[in-house]
Image 1 (cartoon, rainbow, N blue to C red):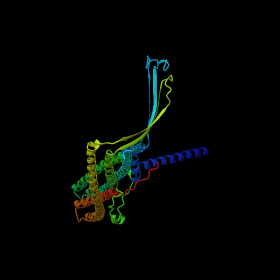
Image 2 (image 1 turned 90 degrees about the horizontal axis):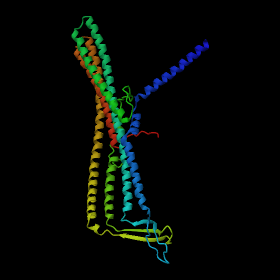
Image 3 (image 1 turned 135 degrees about the vertical axis):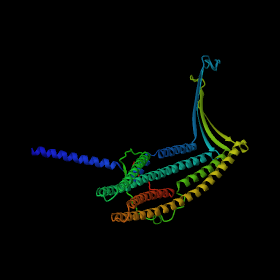
Image 4 (image 1 turned 45 degrees about the vertical axis):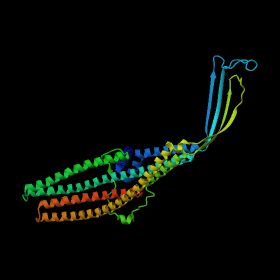
Length: 442
């Protein structure tokens, strides 16, 4: 019997351990931390997938342009069969006549000089590939920025819910106190109803925040490719002790050489300049050499002609291009260069202003946190004072409820200020190319 009981308890223990592990695993799966959200967003993003496809396509185009350095080789062949003789019999020369003929041949052509178009085509293809790779980097940064923004929005709502919950506990205790005082005949019923009205308003705000959290969670889950579950919670805790941006980032980085948007504008200018050179190449002569080897005979070997190799060369001089449409096309391409250069200058100014705006927004967001902390400190102390005064009969219930609501609003403002700071910080790091990209294991 003891052996049976021991076996039974052992099985129960194993089952409980398994159940605890399962519950812990499920709880972990419902937690959302910023690092995992960013990784999931990077893996799921359709923009990044399309960026990789565009880069792959540009690489194939570059390989295609490089293949123009090699000779062009083609083979041809044809055959004819006549039901009557194609060539009638010729005594002593062609006694049987010919009713079939065939020809096979191969030609190899190598461009010696094409006005530089082959070299320019390779340079343009490389610029296109570089642009696609930069665009993919920009897509990655954009996904990281959006994921962080949505994550901190969810954190903001969760922290406001905590403030609501704390107020709810406080009002429940106050409501119980009012009920006791009413039963003792020390207060009028309207004071009890006043607390109930305040609690009803609190429950309404609680319901609104609950719905906002579900929407924010759905938005984040869809963007990051995460299975939506209303029980999921963002686990990043709010830390109000944040170092000043001036200590953390020193001075704003206005150098744009590593900025992806600026690099893309530079590539557009480079591509426009190469296009002008490519258009000018149409005005230059082109040289090519080649080799042809062919055989012409009948299936009866009546001709007996061996393979005949022939070397040839070609020269093409585009004379009319000097006053035709090609000349006008060069002018159009030069205008495109000027447009691209103006866009680069304008983009540089806008990017510089954007960086400085993000910097000052970050400094202001930091000050908002300090201001919100002071309001919370005041609201907490004021509520305590008002409660003591109310219990002592020195003020009325309205003053106490106003103090409680002010404290709740201050806590919500602090949560909002912190989330706003983290969002402003992410934007600043995005514009100065300082975003932290998580490492995704293949």
